Each structure stands twice: as C-alpha cells, then as structure tokens.
Length: 417
Image (cartoon, rainbow, N blue to C red; front, side, top):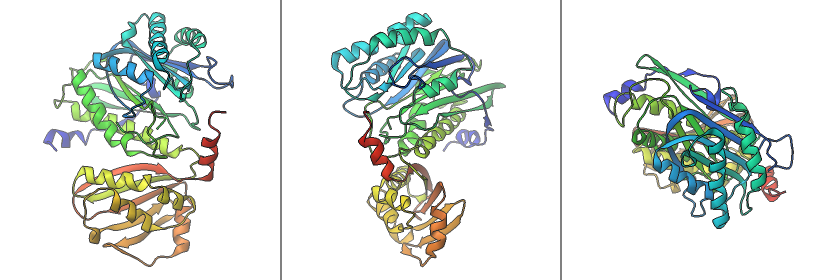
C-alpha cells in the first residue's frame, strides 16, 4: 500500500441522504408500468444525470448474459452515459435477436424522452428468464416515468427494481476533497440467485466526482471485488448481474486520474457504498432468517483471505447448520480447508459472535470444549459473525451470506407464479 493510500484510509466519510440521487445533478423515479401483476408494485425505474457522465461497469460472467447486459457492455466501452432505464418482472435473457432489439428500443425510447443519445442510455432488466418484454407497456411506462423524475425520486426507483426482495437497498455517503463535497450514493436489488462473478443482482451507484473513465472503471472493479464478489446467497450466478457507476463531475473538483490524487479516497467511499449494498442483499436473502458475516484475518494474501471467507458463507452445510442454530464448527473449518486458500491448519482459530455474546470454538487447529446452550443463544440472533483467524499472514477479507431455510425452497419452487 502506498503512503497516499494509507492517508486516504483516514478520510472522514459522512452519512448522506437520498440514495441514488444523493449526488448533485442526478434525478430518478419509478412507477408501475404493468410488467408485474400487482398494480401496487412498481416495475420500471429511470436514473438520469443532468449532464453526461463518465461510466464504469462490471457484469455477469454467465455465458447466457441477458440482452441488456450486452447492450450495457457497449455503452460502458464508449465511456459515457446519461441515463439508466431498468425494468423488473422480466429478465430479457435467452430471448435471441428480438430480445436484443427490445433492449435497444428501451434505450431509444428513454433517450428520446430525456433528449439523450440512445448509445448513452444504459438498460437493465431483472425477473423471469426466457420471456419477451411487453414492449407496448414499456414504451408508455418509460415516457411516463421520464416525465416525473426528481432529485427526491431515488426511493421510488429503488422500489421499482425489486423482485423477491423484501427490503429496499439504498445508501449514500459524502466526504471532502479539494475543498469540495463529494457524494457517492446507490441502490441495488437482489435476494436470490446471488453469487456474483465480476445475485439476480443489479447495482446502480452515482457520484458527482470528476474522474477520468479509466480511473472509474478500475475503481468499480476494485469495489466489486471487495463487495459484490464477496456475497453469496445460493451459489447461483445470474444472467443479468450488473454493477454500473455514473460520475457526472458536478462536485467541481480537478479530474481524478488512475492512481493519482483523490483516487484512493474515492475507492474507499465507493467500496463502502458497495459493501453496504452487498450486505443488505445477504440480509434479505430469499427465505433467510440470519445474516452471516465471515471475517477472515491472518491470511498470507488477499486472495487467500477472500477464498476462505466466501467458501464459508457459500457452504450449504454451513448455511443449514446456522438455520438449525447448531454450532457445528467442523463445517466451517471444512469449507475453509477446501476453499483453495493457503494456510497452516495447525494455526487456525475460530469463534462465533452475535449480540448475545461470543464463543471460541477452535484454537490452533483443534476444537475446544464449549457450552452448547451459550452457543445456541448466540446463534438465535438475526446477525451472526464468524471470526476465522488463519494465523498465516497479515491479510483479511469479509464475506456475507445467509442461512438456508425451508422458505428458500418454497420461494424458488413457485417463482414463476
């Protein structure tokens, strides 16, 4: 870590209100266009930057990438974007040439409504795979949504992108840079089919920082690797996973360049926003009764720390044990052992912690005698922290997941209805 990066870690980050419209120069909105059966559920959202913005993004590695993902890859390659149009209730995935044409038309309709070039309009979809979009509904819905955008519309937009989500996922922060207030805000959706490789996962983050395209793209990748690529609900990587970040420069700072002044501070704020949204996805996991946060330390490399952490929260046996409130620590050790992480098993320490207390389960690679009733009280809490010290280095990582309940099966056995 450079001295500049070390100094950036001390930047004071403040809470900000407004979610995806917290940053200057952004407006948003959401409404019911008719894609979902229930008229009370919003299903279409638009985010609009009043000035053209630099854009960065990372996407699913699924070979069945949805049509809007392919469209967004082209927009991101161009480096500029001014709007995002998102529908829920239909993924527009595995829909062939017609699906690609529909994604392009969504961009064109939105672009006309906002007087923006269609090649600067990002398009995202989430919902059922293999069904063509109802374009007459979308044409009318996009026009109506574009007419009611506002700087206060971030929450309605966040509501409109939900599918099986139970909670809106929004957050925003600000910090001072060059005497300017820089704000980073975002919204996300996802509670099932979450195991990004870059969940049905969509994330949209906005900032008023002035930053070059190459720096923004690298920052997005770094933030995704530390957040969305460290969350898993069920081990399934969606066809539609997308993380998109727009930076419109309205803060008025000098342009941040890759590795230059202001870059590390921005990465810190961006990662914080992304990590909060990722954690909310795990908390809202389909059928989840518990949030699992695995904090790994003592790893010989960052990759080793991340491998071990994500393997633990991704293990079906670990997830089932926590649902049953069973401190079966052997499953945690086993998951770390097969993760591919390098460490000395004879140096590993393991404990569990929640609002009800903390209990040590393993010391220097060997299991300890512990009180089962105390362990059960700890595991009855909604949020549980798994502390895994590999004892083999100085690197650390955090991952997020949830337990595996009967309700998860019920939700996904009946998803299309």
